Structure formats: structure tokens, C-alpha cells
Image 1 (cartoon, rainbow, N blue to C red):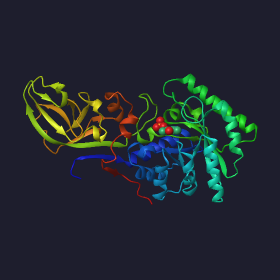
Image 2: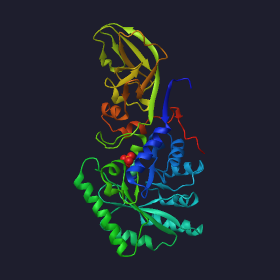
Image 3: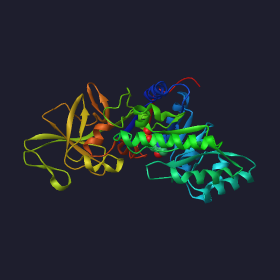
Image 4: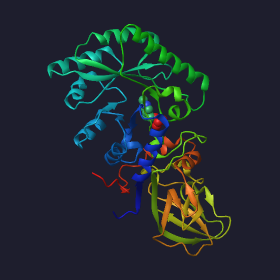
Length: 373
Ligand SMILES: *Cc1c(COP(=O)(O)O)cnc(C)c1O
């Protein structure tokens, strides 16, 4: 690696976060560790390996590609694809023993056919809509949907789930969703339809609504030690650090400008350090003139626009900042910390976007793996 840009992933912190989630939900609630989009940018297989050792029951992925990648890496535990795919690909769920999310009768029929051909029964999770407005029938129309699925002999209704869009911000709506989801399950049970697994809680739902745990939860962001809201009441350890190095240093005079658009004009003579990171790496252009970085235990301000491969920081009159010095863009150094939440706030986005868009070209370095086989 010639370009000094890398990500450090602390696997011990990842395990600690899962242990805290386990403590929060109790021993009888199953955990679907959500590892979609390369484990929120942390790296799919190394993260999945560690989560499994720390007690994850299922993996939740975003695509059939990710599910197959886990199977090909040797994982044998249950994997649920949290989205849906076109029905022409149904047979892959049978071939790789992957649980699909069912949102249409047509897909279920195609799956049923593929399972019958292979002489197996395939477990599925049905998704119903209680207010997310994304995948699945609205719960009132979902009774008929479930009735149609029951006719299919080669699928097993293993799970039923829904999703909470405002667990961070609207208690009334979230309570209402939890209630109608619970009622839906009870009404079906009266007709003799039982789903072994029932789930609706993502990270924030899990923390704020114990009633939303049912018997399975789907944490994502908090596994990685990132808080979906600032006041989330769970101790978490951030897992990922983004680091680079100073690749050039120079003095500039008062009135000289830095980067495209000349949006930064030095108000005094100062020293500018150029760092090897840019928007093509997933370091947002929106951080132009507003991020901070850590060099040698101090914060410095990013000045001018973020470039494709570079950013510049104003190091003032410090004469101890040199080419090759380590720069922390996300993470901590000495007493200074920059969280993914901080970076998201500066870029006016959400921390999910910050970590999941970190380029997969950036090398990941995995620290503190669990040593027991
Ligand atoms: C991504 C996702 C989750 C995890 O959400 P977090 O907010 O990261 O905990 C849970 N459920 C579904 C359906 C998802 O798509």
C-alpha cells in the first residue's frame, strides 16, 4: 500500500458491543446481527466471524450477493436477506440455504417450486408494513397474504417482521406500530398460524422500546459502536478508525487561497498540511471548510474544499507537523476524539452514510481478533 490511507477495525470493541446488546435483550431473545453493505463499511467476513464468536444467532444482509459471500466464506448459521429480489432468482435461496424476506405471493410461489424440486422445505420470514411504507403489504391486507403463503407446502413460515421508521423521534407512532404488529401476530395465532420468530426492533427500537424486542432483534449501527441518536442510553465503543498521513507541508502568506473555488483565503500567514483522503474515498465533499482532524494529539481545521484524493488542514504556526505524520479522521488519539457521529453532523448527514460509504478500496486492518478457534 503506497497511499497512506487505512481503516482500523477493533474486533474486541465489536464483541463488547454485542455482549452489551445481549445483556440488554436477555438470553431468550435471538439476535440478527445486521451486516449489510459490508458490515456498515467495516468489512463483511471479518466482522461476521467475530460476531458469530460473540454470540450472534442470525446474520441480516442487504442482498443475495452478501448472503452467498458469507456461505462461500464457510458460515453455516442462519442468514436472512432483509430485502427482496426478483422471483427469477428464488432458486438461489434454496441452493445456498438462505432465508428470504417474503413480500409477494409470486416470489413465494417461485421459491416453493424451487424447494419442491430440491425436495426440501425452506424457512422464510414474512415482512408486513405497519408504517415504514417500504416493503411488505400494509398489515390490514397482510392476512390474505399470509393465508396464500400457508398453501405452499415447501416453505416454512419461520418469521414475521416489520420495521420502525421513527423509533428515534416519535413515541406515539412507534407504540402504535408495536401494538398493531402484536395484534396481527395474536390474530393469526387464533387461526392456528404461529411464527416461531417475531421481530421489529433495529438499534434504536432495541434501546428505547423493550416491548419491541418480541423474541428477536435486528441491531445494526450499535454493533459498530455508533449511536443512532445522541442520547441513546447504552454504553458503546466505536469500532472503526479512519487514518491517513500528512503528504505535504508548506507555509502560505496572508491572502493566499487553498483548494478549488478559493473558498478559503488565509487571514494570516500560516502552515498548510495536505492529507491523503478525499471524497472518492467516501470522505464527504460536504466536509469542505468544516471538518476537524487530529494530528499529534491536537485538533486542526480542514480548510478549503475537499478534493477527490486530498484535503488540506491549517496547522497554524506549529512547526512540528511533518510529512509522514499520522492523521486521525475518525477515531481517537490522546485526549482527542472524532466520532462518526461528529463527522455526520459536520457533513449534515447521518452516521450510517458516513461509515457505509467508506470506499471498499481502503485497506481494513483488523485488531484484537478472538483467539479461541
Ligand atoms: C438495516 C436494517 C436494520 C438495522 O438498523 P440499525 O438502525 O442499523 O440498527 C434492521 N432491520 C432492517 C430491515 C434493516 O434494513
